[in-house]
Length: 259
Ligand SMILES: NC(=O)c1ccc[n+]([C@@H]2O[C@H](COP(=O)([O-])OP(=O)(O)OC[C@H]3O[C@@H](n4cnc5c(N)ncnc54)[C@H](OP(=O)(O)O)[C@@H]3O)[C@@H](O)[C@H]2O)c1
Image 1 (cartoon, rainbow, N blue to C red):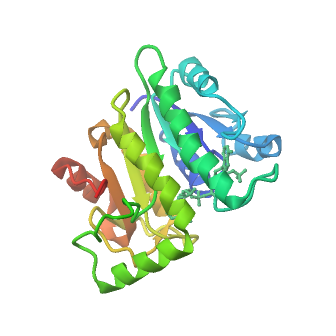
Image 2: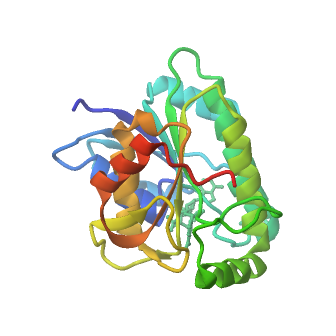
């Protein structure tokens, strides 16, 4: 497989760094432009692969769509991964966690959609991180949820209403976009456990958490799966081989959003 040009938005993130390592590994050697938000992150990100990783400081909170269009065109990006998120934390310039969630998770996403649409010539595919259980506020529980899933879903919505609101708005807007190809990846609760090399993919249970290593592996596998365009793929911890199960879900066209 030839070397690809990849742009990661939110390159300093925990999953993003794991994904970067997979992309630049000796057997793949893809070129990664890693968009970060602080100059202090340049050296550690560059150290992931001095030859293949190019850090670029550009915050979603202070930039314009044209800044990203320029990056996508200049790098001739094949795939853009959106891995950024406000993590429910307040901003550096006094924004509350609520304002920052809207700004990074929602407005940041829309800015990247707009930037992709403005790319002249072949547009990169977007692989977008979202989260399991994002759905319309009035949507019923998915049919495959058991009682424990339903109870957890209700609890999470009460604990993180702002996150669920703005992620839903970002995702539903993505589903409406037709100017570029996209895939949504919706992990369950994330852990720092070492990857199992397996997962539960597709219609799965909310109560099962998933290692960031395994989510990074799913994202990596999607690099070559243009046929996953238009699908929203749920990922939690589980026993299935990642490549084989992903292939099954993609071939079936199984999509978990919108509900
Ligand atoms: N936590 C969970 O259990 C869970 C479950 C399902 C889905 N998710 C989703 O998965 C995503 C990735 O998870 P993760 O663990 O890798 O998160 P993470 O480590 O918090 O990564 C998010 C990245 O976004 C970056 N970012 C924040 N504001 C930005 C801005 N204005 N411009 C550019 N980049 C910005 C952060 O930069 P800094 O490094 O400078 O802060 C950070 O590197 C989360 O954001 C969330 O949406 C999370």
